Length: 181
Image 1 (cartoon, rainbow, N blue to C red):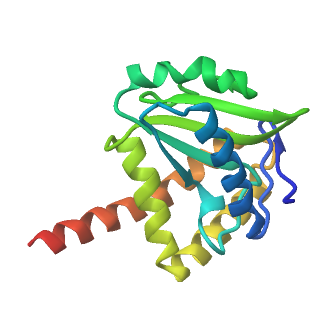
Image 2 (cartoon, rainbow, N blue to C red):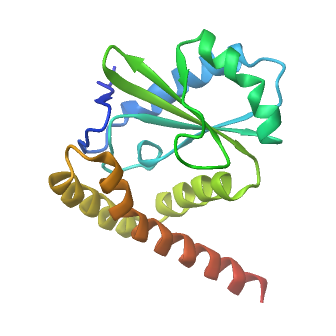
C-alpha cells in the first residue's frame, strides 16, 4: 500500500508511485458503491494521476455531476464514508472534500459540473501531461523546487505553480483551435 497523506498546509513532493493508481481504484470502488444510483463520473486527477509525475501523496478525485445543485445531494453520502465537506475549498464552482487518516489528508474530492471549466481543466491537463513526458519532467522539477521554498505554505506553493498550469492549458486550447481550422 502506498503511504498517503500530508499534514494540512504542508508541502512534500514524492517521486511517482505506481501504487497511487491502485489507491485511486480502491477509493473509486468505495465511491461507486456509496453513490450507486447517482449520475456521476469518477475520475483520478491531479499529479498522482499522471504517470511518472512527482506529486504530493494525496489522491485527487474529480466527481463529475450535471450541476453544482445536483452535487449537493452527495454531501451527506460522502460524509458517511469519512469525507469532510469544506465548502468550495476556496475555489468557486465546486464542492470540496478531504479524507483524513489522523492528522494526514489522504484524499481530496472535487465535485464539479461535467463540461465546466474546472472539470475540463482537470481532465485536459491530466491527459495532456500523460501524453507528453518532457512536460511531466518540467512540471515535476518545478514542483520539487517550489516545495523547498514553500514546504510549510501550500497556498503559496499552489499560487507559484499556477502559471505553469495556465501555460499548459493555453497550449491545449491553442492545439484544439488549430485542429478545428
